[in-house]
Length: 394
Ligand SMILES: Nc1ncnc2c1ncn2[C@@H]1O[C@H](COP(=O)(O)OP(=O)(O)OP(=O)(O)O)[C@@H](O)[C@H]1O
Ligand SMILES: O=C(O)[C@H](O)COP(=O)(O)O
Image (cartoon, rainbow, N blue to C red; front, side, top):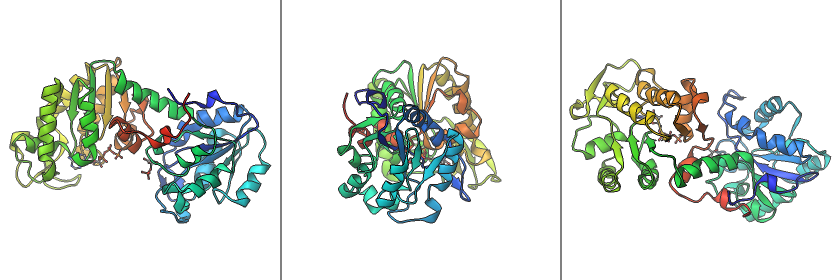
């Protein structure tokens, strides 16, 4: 990586402002999935072992610059304390005199978690004053928040102007895996793109068509492609204004010699619910008052075949409405094929696909599950990540 890492600097005795992405799912005041906390542990533990005074900063949810009691980081601090096996001090603010006083009390190897940085309006505006306030707390800045690296905020970008700024281990790992996939992929290289809307995936499809050998399309966005091929899609999700774009993607795939796989059959339902009546139909025969909610068995088989013959697969977006048992099979088939393909390096691009492999109990079988939803998507689109750009070059 061309950015400095936490290993490139001396941290002993220094106060380190470490931005992490502890934006975790919560229910009734408890952390329901601590994956992102666990993913940041190697950096935190390293800083502790090296004798740094560790200040952790994160956002949680979207409080829009106001204090929202339910979005305080207290439960996160508790979970972190359990995982680290050592005391984590938690402050009710993220900067200011009271916080400075707490920081002064820290000894080498101590850990303090600041309050939700999005309680301050300046955070999302990348306000220079707020960035300075954060920087005043510390001697060094470490960014390990890959999941928030696509945001140019005060704690992800602005602060780096005031302190030596380096990447943490999670940040490095994510950039290494995703970067290698895009710049020097093992082949055959397959991208699987699903999810709800074409509009959210335009950039990623366009960029990946320049790089992959196979592109597999599934999920709700497939119906715009099916329509682009001249078939009726009934009540399925359709973006009328993206049909022409879908045609250009199919054309681009042809020009680039990319094998383009779309569903040949789908599971249609007469209602968006688990108890709906369902049938499997070919894409030429989608009934006018039914909607497609999953890929059909023939498509699943083809997709699994392509996956197993690939050396590298990047997957972003579910193949169907996997949250409903009746329409989870397409997504499950992709997850199972990836789990079975021992020679295939599988990269799960965060968000819903990561939730799906977790739900099917197959997460451990994947080579890399990104902790970034939006961040990994923007990276795959070839966009610059402000949280990375802001760090010091090697
Ligand atoms: N055929 C379909 N019709 C309607 N919705 C669908 C269909 N297939 C999948 N979906 C829905 O798409 C949603 C996921 O879409 P999204 O584009 O957000 O995926 P993602 O990129 O994996 O997630 P994230 O944005 O969190 O990274 C899921 O909730 C799923 O139920
Ligand atoms: O959950 C995420 O993708 C990151 O934590 C970023 O959150 P945001 O979309 O609210 O900026």
